[in-house]
Image (cartoon, helix red, strand yellow):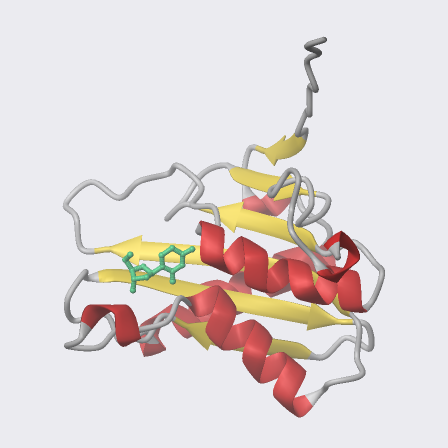
Length: 162
Ligand code: THU
């Protein structure tokens, strides 16, 4: 017998960061502010991530590239590993991602975390047993919001899988 399993992901979209709550706006601004520290001489694609912890602490990260390309790391993983290193017991509430490229026409399309970052973030959603909200931005314009990492990573593999 054959059946279909349908998994639906729903995202909230905002016309601009100005439509977000005050704390989410602050977090998005933190992600934008840290962009300048990205080390992206190879792609010239600058990514900033800002993570809100349960007590209001904000931890940031940027993409860090390397001449041996696969040795670099995305902003989201730099930020989440840093957060877990410094504040291992503080629940992760929200992750905001901002980008900037040197293209003449900045893209307003929100950038979403790559597959490896989704997997890395999912670990902390499972660890704290609490959804992590993801806010995705382009260089300007719309913001996409995912209520959880699981919403971004259907059928995700986790410690609950074995
Ligand atoms: N990058 C991130 O930092 N986060 C993502 O979610 C996607 C990609 C970085 C990796 C690399 O330094 C550059 O963007 C181009 O892929």
